[in-house]
Amino acid sequence: MNPQRIVVVGAGHVGLYAALRLSKKLNRRRAEVVVIDPQPHMTYQPFLPEAAAGNISPRHSVVPLRRELSKCRIVSGEVTKIEHARKTVTVQPIDGPSTEMTYDHIIVAPGSVSRTLPIPGLRERGIGFKTIGEAIYLRNHILNRLDVAAVTPDPAVRKASLTFVFVGGGFAGIEALAEMEDVVRDALRYYPDLDQAEVRFVLVEATNRILPEVGPKMGAYAARELDKRGIDLRLDTRLESCVDGEIVLSDGERFQAETLVWTAGVKPSPMLDRTDLPRGPRGHVTCRPTLQVVDGDTVLEGAWSAGDCAQVPDLTNPGGWCSPSAQHAVRQAKVLADNIREVVLGGEPEEYRHKYVGSVAGLGLYKGVAHVYGIKVKGMPAWFMHRTYHMSRIPSFNRKVRVVADWTLAFVLRRETVALGQLHTPREEFTHVTPSVPAERETVGAGAR
Image (cartoon, rainbow, N blue to C red; front, side):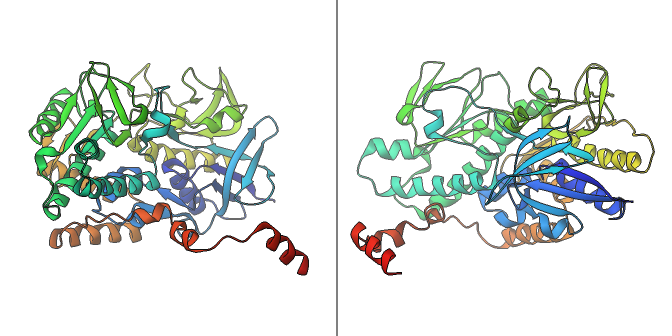
């Protein structure tokens, strides 16, 4: 009997957890699990603010696929097309021509991307906060702005360099803002020419509240705490333009800023546009509670989805949908893997049911808010809950130990506040010192060979 091929598109929370469970639940005589992703690792996104702040090593916030999924086949490439009618997926590898692969089952879990708007200047000036690369770039950029401000003789440049704008008041925006404000506050002790009063952090949020996931009371507490730290909260306000670093807000204010971080929501991966799978009104793959892809009342045999890119009915909230959170994604991955195993072995899939238990959010070092099982917690206890929960959820014992080691060292040693900006242009110095070769010499040399 030939093993069935299970293709996993995307190695995020859903893809990695589902592939890992399938590789343990089905032996290779029954199924071959193929994981396709452009990156060789899974990024544990809740740790991006900690990685940007230097609380943990960037490498410890990602999980190497080949180490963790040793029983799976890893394909480093991008899925450019899915034709479920033919049960084929087209893969563009890192190098070389594209290839077509057939499958028996497919898990469509490419996740989400930043939901941006056609705001003038955003494409040129904005910094996202969805990947480990963006998190490290933001850290280096902000610390570099302190270096610029400390030496420039131009007051306007100094003021713009010390102004940091974050757009979006959800988890990603608030946690990134709070952590980076901590970083700047710690770094200023090494900049005698700069004063904390010159630093301006601005949060722009289109609604009238922040952190809606933790409830109105805890969201209001978080807003008060950020306000006490001197952070300028602009609620019911939109970013209108940021051309050439001039920030224009819907409340009429204009000012210059050299840092603009965009965290205003997410949307399903655009890769889904190149599939023949049914989609909901907001672009999500439509699913049954069993996590099977469904077109109206018709189940598409062998097609499965979950996580940020999927529209899954929430059975604990009739008429609602599961939120695009890590809490749901990890639990959906488990049910999805078990359902595929049941189908491969001739059984019936079960429905996904999980009542959202609440949320925790960090507000920087030793500060946080939480609303879990109806209990509201704030301050250091909430921060400890935040760290404990996410440490328990990051895959592999190896990563858990490394993260705890980073945190333990941080209790003893001061935070590192040095920019490694050369990481983003590693060949610039070498290119500068290497003389160019005239075109005629290149031609002669090529002919001589």
